[in-house]
Image (cartoon, rainbow, N blue to C red):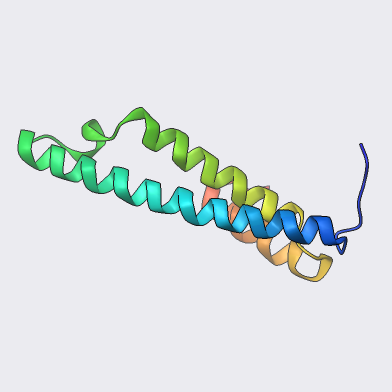
Length: 93
């Protein structure tokens, strides 16, 4: 694999695109959650049963983007961000 320095302008541009994708995915997640809440209210079921499979896929994509952002973070930010992602994902590594 071609290891680019994390200060490379290409990495900076990729991180910017990942941040934009993360924002779009979070908006999609919020929309799907609102739709599921409305559907659950109409059918008197729990929100867990009303969430579409796409919600899970979007949530997994958000986690992937956050992991990529952590892995490409400058060295001084990487340790703190990794710990935050591990805590968010419930990992004890």
